[in-house]
Amino acid sequence: LSDSKARNLRDEVARGIEKDIVWWYKGGATTEKQYDFLCDNLEIKLHRYPNIVLYLWLGTCDLTVKQHDGLIELKSRDKSSANDLIKQFRDIYTFLRGFPTVEPVLLELPPYSIYEYNKHKGREDTKYRDDDKILHEHIRIVNTFVRETNLIYRRESPRFSLDIENCRRDRYKKPRYIFRFSTFYYDGIHPISELARLWLLRICQKVSQDCA
Image 1 (cartoon, rainbow, N blue to C red):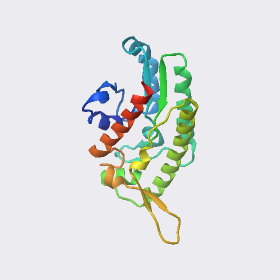
Image 2: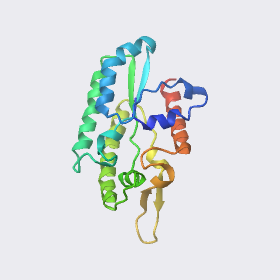
Image 3: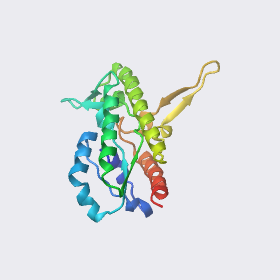
């Protein structure tokens, strides 16, 4: 269950267990909209898929919002958007308790860049770099909740951020970690084909463990 980033992974499906994944995604969908989808459709889906491991890969469209000109901005500068997203995750888990044959697993939210996305859309402004710092703190808060929740249920998400992270070390300073958005994302949000393929394989590895 996801938003548009899942489409990039689905397009890389080629063989084996990859073909067994059922994709429920919608471009631009917020967690609230996908929660509504579950409320409206899960009982029907269970007739076809009686036992489901449900991977929840949501949140990208909850921490930023798209403006009328196509650019994106922070949904909030404080932590309220991250806290709201966490509450929605909790609501989904509460809802799914009514379906004992559905096992939810949260997937970590990959970092993304307001600066790179808006640059891709033709608006390059250094102020968006400051927005990125706030965004990445919000993502850190959400992913901490994801890890803690998965720990309770003895599940684990791939650490997607590690695949785009680069460590820079100076001799007398602490290591500095940066995300290589311009290298691995084609627009600051969505992964290029090679990264999408890698993420698909990482998820498939979890599927083979969780569905064994």
